[in-house]
Amino acid sequence: KLRSNIIACGMAVPPKILTNAELEKMVETSDRWIIERTGIKERHILREGEVISTYAVQAAREALNKAFLTPEELNLIICATLTPDFLMPSLSILVQKELGAINAGAFDLSATCSGFLYALSLADQFVKNNPTWKVLVIGAEALSRKTNWEDRSTCVLFGDGAGAVVVGASQEESGVLDFILGADGSNWPLLTLKGGGSAYFPFDERLPKEEYYIKMQGREVFKIAVRMMEKIALELLERNGLSASDLSLVIPHQANLRIIEYLRERLELPPERVFVNIHKYGNTSAASIPIALYEAEKEGRLKRGDLLLMVSFGGGFTFAGILMRW
Ligand code: ACO
Image (cartoon, rainbow, N blue to C red; front, side, top):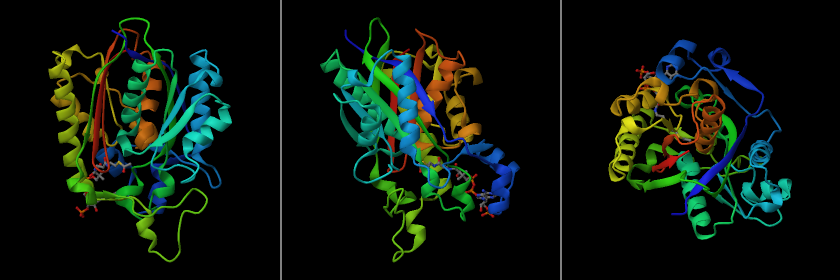
């Protein structure tokens, strides 16, 4: 049976690091509170004048190089993002142009923090129907642009970055085995970003500025997140006749270490089988899972043949899970 697989990964984050100590000078918070309540120690953020497409392109180039593919060989580029440089053209078009991917279609996908898994499941469909296709899937986010730096309950959480993977037909038994995409709009007001704007014109001065930032009722979001992450993970395992102990590695969306720990406990897995890098990057939304994938492979935590589960939740709410043989 033909499967799609991730051929190679890339990642790129802006060099500027914002530490908890620096946040202590900006809002009423402490390094200790942030670490205890979220697990985050620092995050990378764009400098004034920088745009996230720069890093999306960098991550894409790395993935292509590692896959031994040229940009001309790409058939499709999908960028998962809620913070593209412009509303038009899309982030994926900017990537297409910079790479010179002259034979590729390109579009953005908006599914908040689940965006990367949504995009990967789409790439899976395209490749299964067109086995020669190579699809570039990117998760890239500039959340610092949408962060209210006066709101301590949110500004400690987010970071910027990009991760990219190249998807193609699998040569062996490896690849995407199953996925779940979920959505539930009934609680959407708990997590919002109501104002639009691009990287270049972020505000319309006639509207209250707080509407241009991410607003969140953290405690309520937390409860939904833990419930849905567990549900998706267990459902995927059960319908594939697997138990959590069969998993080599779980890569959860990196939103809060306590959410990840809760999932790990529910799955009764030891720490080495659940990947965590939130301490370095914070929550980078759609970029969090591809960045984690990249690092997991680089650190030797993910090897060919491993059974991998990725799970995410995000504003909306959206949920997703992908089970794959690496
Ligand atoms: N520093 C110090 N104190 C703080 C801070 C801070 N940065 N933030 C909040 N507090 C205070 C609160 O004011 C509150 O004080 P009070 O008891 O006097 O009222 C106290 O800490 C506890 O606040 P809670 O909100 O209950 O803290 P909680 O333990 O729930 O942690 C957090 C807050 C980290 C936001 C948590 O709820 C969370 O992670 N929620 C999920 C967030 C998430 O994953 N969102 C997905 C976003 S995806 C996207 O938008 C791209």
